[in-house]
Image (cartoon, rainbow, N blue to C red; front, side, top):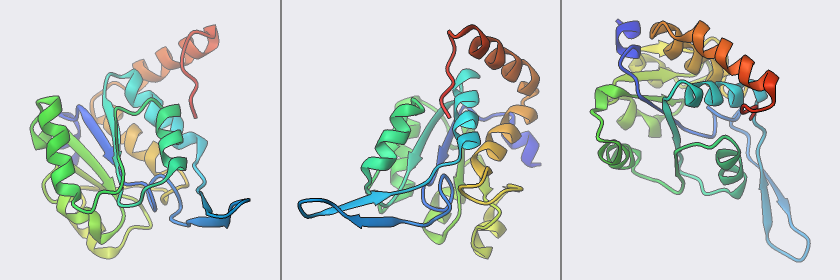
Amino acid sequence: MSKARAKRIKLVLFDVDGVMTDGKIWIFPAPGGGLVEAKGFHAQDGAGISLLRHAGIKTGLITKRQSETVALRARDLKMDYVCQGIHDKRSAFFEILKKEQLAAGDACFVGDDLIDLPVLRVCGLAIAVQNARPEVKQAAHHVTAHSGGDGAVRDAAEYVLKAQGRWVDVFESYIALSGEGGGSREQ
């Protein structure tokens, strides 16, 4: 059932804390006052997003927090949508669908916590990361083998591409471009 859902996917959206990261938020005092927020991202997750983009699948993130670190990572990965400071993720999800002229069934959302449930309940393919809250796993069509910040994004990307029968062609093409120096190697 979930593989049939994955075959339709044209857009994959991610939560950030607990999905693209392990959920830890590091806050340090900045020289001259203020605070600096730091997060860690897994290189294989970045490659997964690049593979989706290479396959022509749009990507983005919807997160409640506002962070320049996240904005930098999203720019590095050339993500199509960066929605930060979002309390109503469901509304943001439908705004993106409207811009892309897609149905909810054409979109995947990857989440880990209760705030993600409104989107997970309406999207075409709901994916929970391994360390997601029990209610999120219960609402998901698929659960990744890895935890957030530790390869879960890559798991989700591969799941979609494999279900679509595109995995081998996409990764072979990605490797060929990377080897020639003309491709993208964002990680």
